[in-house]
Image (cartoon, helix red, strand yellow):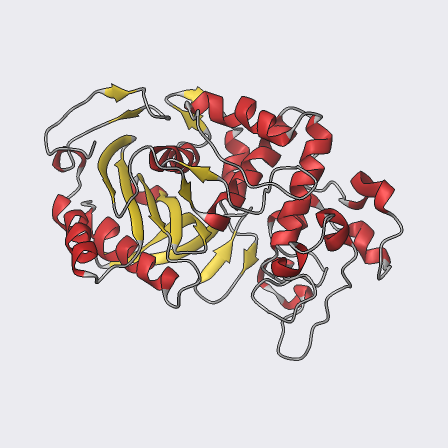
Length: 358
């Protein structure tokens, strides 16, 4: 049910993560810029938007769904859910199941040796390289000619072998080498690496990864309905495709905003959340990358604020603004369309951020 303008101050336990609802105005939120989204969807200015949810100071202040979507719809946010893989890495480290982000990847896949395109640098690829999409393997989903493009991975059965068989990247004159890059890493968007990280996690936690995710994360947030995509070998796809309800997506953003706590209870190590959500690689002049989190400064009133978010095909963006104590979930099925991310960013700036009072 969409929020009314009244102060409700009730906890909703049904339908996934429990949220307290609050009146937008009482939370320092102007409802008009948010309600304008509904008119823009009706007029066709905004296309294929499926949901807009906003929380301020830990309470749900705005919730709308569009098209055939509703509160109980499992929303397809594509690669936005890559970020949850980082949550699970942190949970595994916290439980002493994984020694840390410096752990090297290839020892967990000894049975797949020898790898094609042998090179000693493959054995130096770490978990952190996969979290920051900065390994030296030639893998670039933004380049249709890349040997590691995810569309090629989907055609084979063994995804970790696909990734580990890739050659080492070259750095032509127009590309910045890691040593010359900010943070010492050269970013290259690589779903195959994140998918391989899922296989590695399943080995270290020694249960199916969906069960580990339920125990370590979802159950503690009250998330009781999920739909995973799976690899041909049956392991859940940690490179994206996990479907969740809008309130549950918002809860995952709020979890990071609250330093790994949900309703006062510790779920993730706060140090892990802090490390994950600060920059480790630079994508372009406007955008940086954490541990599977995007970071970007966007305009708010007369200055800019840092926005930390998950991002997925279709224009999906789920994230938070630490300085403003705001979490948001903007979902869209505008898959593969030109301008899909620009449309969502306009909603984020012109509606969500514009609604927030100091």
